[in-house]
Image (cartoon, rainbow, N blue to C red):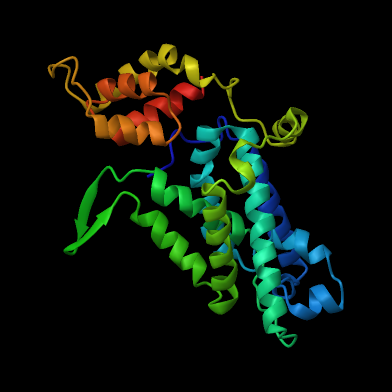
Length: 292
């Protein structure tokens, strides 16, 4: 399960965030300061080391955490493609800020100055992203390994579980705070899902990120229908024999699933027809259409 077309087409904010996270982690790792980046009550309310708040939003405390974290961030770029870079930037800011507020509340209640209770890294954003992943990304395939049933979403859950337990209590706390932040975003508190940032900020992310080869400007959602056939034809030819019937009427459940992911109904229906009612293939068709 790859979250749509490979690369960072239509995901400049995700690309910039991943680059920043990798650079911060490597920089502090080379200096041997990664283990000192965690948050504690004394750091924030005693020593006023506010720089740790910025660093903790990007830098992981170890290379294994970095690998799992970047893998999840890369997969979750699918949400930037669905809602657009502007709203996804709002989602990032909201998730990080709200998760930090919950962490502050926990640190204030515990007042344990002896240890760094909260590990560093963008746990708030990653685990906030699991909320739309659970509710908005459908399960399209099931398979068994040694008699155990898995879905095409299982590997993402396993990677998230590994990251959540990577530092035990120190990583569980920010992970849970991230889930709470993602839940509040989904509930649309303060109408946050309608909030947008100035467009020059998004343009800034596009300029500072490494260029993606052949990345054209994104197409509006309304024009997706016109863009589907070129990719859809290749996708169908790759996955289905040419002798199969040319059209299969998609089910209402499948259409509703794609609509809930942010695609308009007409585009969803046409993609499902092209994909022979396979939701996973149809999702990839729609995402690829958005990148042209």
